[in-house]
Image (tube, rainbow, N blue to C red; front, side, top):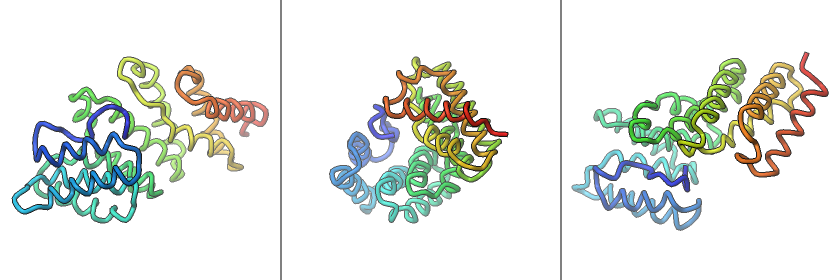
Length: 232
């Protein structure tokens, strides 16, 4: 995710100019500057003689994160990348993020599930693997697979507990958001799932060290409601 401090694509291969622009864009917040850098990278990899399909796929996926109009091109480029036998994993992580931002939850689930966790863990990038697990858990919950989503969510909590500090893992903001939504629903099964996840999270992590004060307040308020009105 932008701003986490890790490069959005390998720098040791492909077109170095395009990849430098992608790297610079990843450090920017969503906006005009980020878009300009990514468009410059895209123009570079679309020049005749620059054969860097991975950089093109990553660039389009990053553009799609702030403008869903790029999603179709990003998907088509990912398919081309897979078709030539190139590694798709950098493109997959960024495309999963883009689909989640665009509300295309089923597609976010598909792309997050296709990522090879070992690809990133061998690069000492456990946080990217855990982020895909978070997207998968949040997507399953939003799609109504409450059992699968809860199981995946608790697994994410376990990794955050065991390796959150040593591996500089990011707070699971999207998972918390969907758990809060579930906990506030009238549907008993959804409410039970949300309450269970929030309870497990609060018992696993020091909330104040992981989340802003407003989020901590929302979690604690939801848990108080869960205790007052337990799902039957």
